[in-house]
Image (cartoon, rainbow, N blue to C red; front, side, top):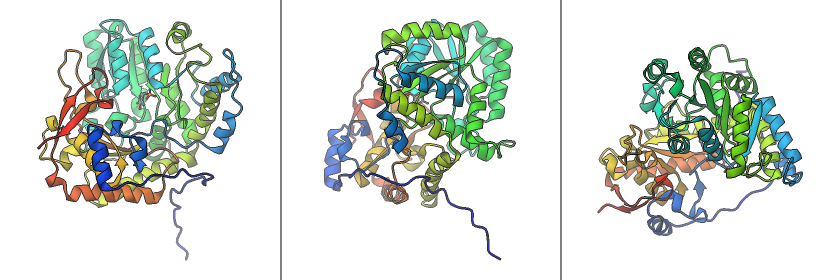
Length: 461
Ligand SMILES: *Cc1c(COP(=O)(O)O)cnc(C)c1O
């Protein structure tokens, strides 16, 4: 009898155009990274072979999206593409009122200014760099309520994005609901390694916040990836489509901020959404100050059109299965090589545990920053630090010392091939074999905000 073979994750698209890449030598890369202050954010993109710095704004748009760009209505007010976008968000996410913004942090700025007052606490399932900074700039304090497993790179908990309900309850009891304008829930928690929250947990958060009259604001940047993990891992959701699961997730929240540069498959764009008229009204006033009129929010009409189409494409089961499948392929290959990666494998990239990789470096010698630079030198693969540099400083000036010291290999959507994944894993292995010889870094320039973007380093002797 013929055995049934489960088909692989292969891409539900084919290529119509390719972008040629520059190949460099090791010597050229050593010079380039030195000149970039050992910060992969400061490299020239031209000097990079496979760019895994981020999955933000780096997706390949579809032929439909490109065609949609041609239908941009560039009127200053009331562009038809705005109404297309509004409709897509209402249809696929279910939020009532929307405000486009130039990207996610534009939405975070406005939302934080509308909802947070000085002295407020904002509980969330792990911080995100720009999200927390806008909360702090608005006078609030972020409080981490994610389960402890999320901070343990070895834990194989299937839902490391879950909220620890006891931590949340304790916080509400301590500060009172009046000082908590909302609970911030990220889907597929970026800083935990692209890890999902379960529907069951989200419902529990909803029940508790409802009891206290506290909103949930959804950082929905990677909601489709989270929905896919729920479909794969959570009982009762096996037969549901990603589209249905995405809609259900949103239904337990009161509003959202979105960086459409991630799951929504565009190169620029974002939005804020809310189900509350008052919040919408206030945000609509503010968006004019910071972004642009409320029917374009810093975007061209064509950008809003591409986003409307991208939202629809992003919730397709075939798309997301191939997306996550490619990442699992890379992660499994690295694990076979013995490279310490965060488990379970996340939705948008592979997170390598730099503490385990370079155990001879202390956190003040920037192990993740060091490892990202070494991988670039080896192969021209550009990754990013997610450790002490990204964590930055507290409002009082002390360093945050995060438990996780990770190098993020973020995979752009619909851009690279399986052979590229092989090259990436092989490069990680090359560096792993030479790891004992690797020296750390010292920081020689530190910007005031979001230092990881522009900080400069020198190699320790
Ligand atoms: C990227 C991101 C943001 C910020 O969005 P930008 O478009 O980069 O401004 C916010 N939250 C999460 C979880 C993100 O990954």
